[in-house]
Amino acid sequence: EYFKYCQPNVRLVNAFWYTGLKDQQDQRGFRDALISLGYTVRTKVLKEYYDDASGRYSQKANLDIEIVVDMFNTVEQYDQVVLFSGDGDFERAIELLRSKNTHITVVSTEGMIARELRNATDRYIDLNEIRDSIEKVEY
Image 1 (tube, rainbow, N blue to C red):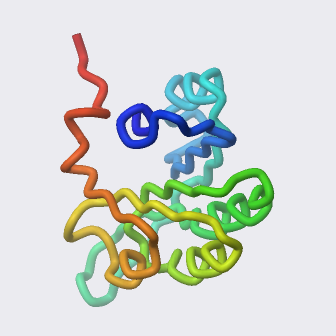
Image 2: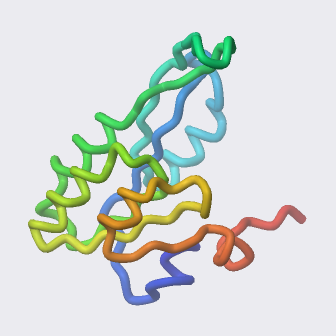
């Protein structure tokens, strides 16, 4: 739906979905549906981390490396990347892709996008501004 909304004449080359899992069966139906739609699905089992400052545990999958590796392994196939993330860790990868004449669009939300990432991208789209146009409505 994003491509219909923003760029009607775009040919989609690759679509990747990255997600953390509680276990290997977590989200199985959803992942299978994405695969049947042509997505490449990358997963990692969530790891639990303790934050000394807050005294709380959190879970993370840390798929940043997988995302960057996929972007660079397929760089010859595309001239545009649409990244749904707000993580500032992608800043350097985005800069390098732009140096290869790749146009970068980042889709995120205000308050969740790192300033460094927003500054590194060619185009920023606030997900909340396009949500009504791309969200699947349950009937």
